[in-house]
Amino acid sequence: MTMSRDLNTEYQDTEKRLYAYDFDYIHRDYMLKALAPHLRTGNVLEMGCYHGEFTKKLQPFFDDITVIEGSSDLIEIARKNVGDGVRFILSYFEDADPGRLFDNIFLVHTLEHLNDPQTVLKKVRQWLTPGGRLFVIVPNANAASRQIAVGMGLIDYNAAVTAGEHAHGHRATYSLDTLEHEAVQAGFQVAHRGGILFKPLANFQFDAAMRGGIIDQAFFDGCYKLGMKYPDLTASVFVVCEA
Image 1 (cartoon, rainbow, N blue to C red):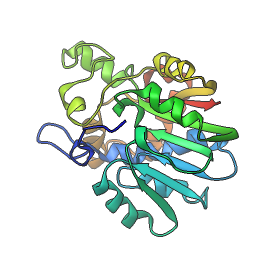
Image 2 (cartoon, helix red, strand yellow):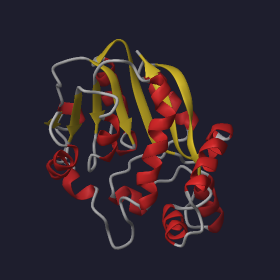
Image 3 (cartoon, rainbow, N blue to C red):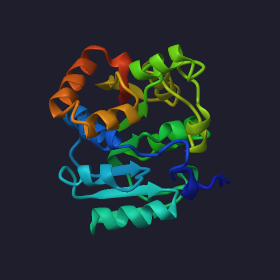
């Protein structure tokens, strides 16, 4: 099933909305911190890589990394950032055939981009080794900052896909319950679920506060700990799935 979307343009910044903020790079550190206790020994498949920042964070944990990415431009950038040792496959997920099984598969801020997530998730189930795990992280519809934006009238409702998000390829906005439902509908068992980083500010506000010296690493550590208590209010939510 071949898609017609141009993935080389969807990730690019626009005049109205950046694709990646400084907050996003810090956020990835806490993603891996949350998932690290659940990793399986063996190899890994990353589905979607952007510029390879999360791929680089996986390298200390895994020697055998494969990436499937639908954008040739992003593969070129990521390959330069991660160096040798990572296998890249240029393909839409719907058409991909990695030719092997994986102990760990990651969909990090990727599921919300898919036209047909059920088709992809059911395909991914066939790529897991016995006992392998799928890790899915998505932006959270119920993040505190997003609910504030709804209260301000900037977003229609929590799970809305804004015009800027749609331009960058988003097709859905998940909360923890709808993410878990998506995984279960595809035949997975959810072994763990949670939230990453309590998020009181929008991304651009975080960036401005960091540049102004208003917040620091200790603030982010506090947000991470608070997010473990209140996962529904975090920047991202995740599920750890088993076939």
